Amino acid sequence: MSPPAEPRALEALARDLLGPLLDLDVPSRTGWTLVGWDAEAGVSLTLGKGDRLLLVEIEPRDDARACLARTERFNVCARRAFRGDEPLDDEERRVVGQIARLLRARADLLPVVERPPTTHRTEVREVTVDRVLVPEGAGHYYVNPYTGCMIGCAFCYVAHRADLSRALEARPALPWGRYVDVKINAADVLRREVARRPPGIVRLSPIVTDPYQPLERRYRITRQCLEVLAGAGFTPGVLTRAARVVDDLPLLARIPGAAVGLSIPTDDDRVRRMFEPGADPIEERLDALERCHRAGVLTFGVVQPMLPMDPDRLVAAMAPFVRCVRIDRMHEMARARPLYAQAGRLDAAEDAYFERTAARLVAGFAARGVQVDALDDLGALVSGARPGVARSPVS
Image 1 (cartoon, helix red, strand yellow):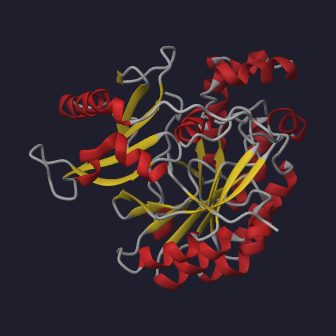
Image 2 (image 1 turned 120 degrees about the vertical axis):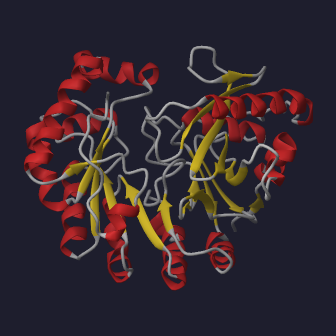
């Protein structure tokens, strides 16, 4: 018999840490309001003022990582939501500084907990949560049906932030890919939330999980959430590395504007086995993309990170079945470099490789009428409009 589901403690811990910030339901004297917040990959806050949205992310302190501010325990990072390539202005930098000062002042309210020893190779924990739908501003939300991901790509940029959240909750330290929290009441919570929120675009799942990881076939949390969103007039945008997204193709095809993206970072399945051994084969992902396209679902592709590949072959395989693509480099190179070394492709870990490959991908997709776009704002894709102009994603 399975143990009873555990209530998540993260929400209460984040409230202890951030206190007054989470009460910004009305404009503060600075004019900034709290749009949404989350505590599953470190702690993140979305602040809004007029048409500006500022995403502030709190991660474990690491002096080797770039950030805007540091406290004794944390790095504080920030970027403009949906416009991450634009530099922050002086006012936005002051806001980040104020958050850092608040973290320093309230640090004693967050206990330093001793994590218990690891007793299992993997951990699948059924949990209950109080919130699921996280507002991002500009009519966007996101939903994480799970926390953690058994696909477990070793280079995943969220691993260290997700471990901070586990540490705050005094969970055992486990490698990324070896733990998942299953939000068994997610659909019920979501049903209450969509009843009091205006409909918008909902991303599943941008940060801490893959919505179609293997456990989805057992629990169907993603499917339950999609059913709730469809019934309430919300528009889902799904991104996955898993071909099993086609399990829900009949449901997705009935939702007006629903979008599905497949992450396909190489055309070579031998490379996939070295870098993404837990992910589905490339051919299966391409087949799923084609099936979604032929079913009338809006489809997009994500080539991120650009792994060793033949860019022309990848374009030829993806272009007929996508409206737009996102392209980006490998960002967690400290963790990823050993993978390149094992594959004998350290040349593909250099800036010159990413710049050269991005240029060939952009040119190839453009020649086939496919736009390259940041895809942070799915509004243009969902509305049927063409996304923004093609641009180099590694500039």
